Length: 353
Image 1: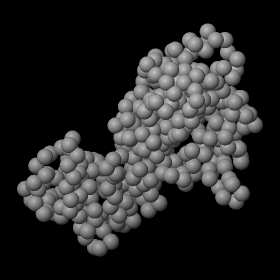
Image 2 (image 1 turned 45 degrees about the vertical axis):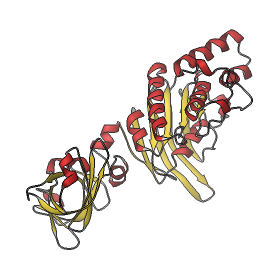
Image 3 (image 1 turned 60 degrees about the horizontal axis):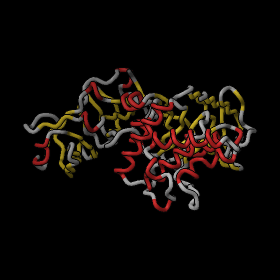
């Protein structure tokens, strides 16, 4: 396997810039997830690493060697696409072995590689089937097996689960994670699904507008988002945001009302700020304590309950395991604990510890 070093990488189509100077070091054996909304540049970055897109400026090194000018086949990487891209006239075994047969690898070597990958992915019963006789999850496993047999320096995944239903995505996430644990392969995975990012990644690279917003472990991005974009994108249900002016004891909203938050930093007093709080950290009170909020909607999810509120005219989501929330009245009390608040300045940059 190999490390991948990306230095000041830029991509433009004519006068339209897509990536604006990406710097990222991916360690040998690391599982990196590029996450962000559609159009943020994550797939473009992956395709540039693969050699499917030219580099406008900057450098890509794989295992210490510059690969900007190398063809995809000369970069020793394997890519798993959103579409399975299997040959319909070939069996599963033939699809998996195709790249080795192109290299004229020995038959014994090819057979061993296919057998090992097939066992890892549970494909032994399907080796003689053609793709049309497989389910979507089975086809995706064949695409992964085709990548594994090559024993490349790095695996690249371009939204490989987006065509699968929710239950199958959950199953395939587990299989990809187990595969990575077995192979300890350098892997880069692109997705817009923050749940996939949180469950799979050693480190997440959050991207927006062609710029890396934050790099860190899943819990680092969840617990200490660097800015408003990361705070809003990571987490489900998403973080609540309250905008206003910092004052003693709370946040003065634009309608003049005060949301009680406890002590904010004295350095921010009088400044425009955004306060964030995750739904699971909002405390509900049924006995008249806290600030009064109107109940708009209650969504039972089985495991927990999402309560949609209006607090001083602002929408607030609460996630609770307390099933008594199902029978709450038209109004309920809420508290926003100071120890769970996230504070952002007028530019959306995180403030404080």
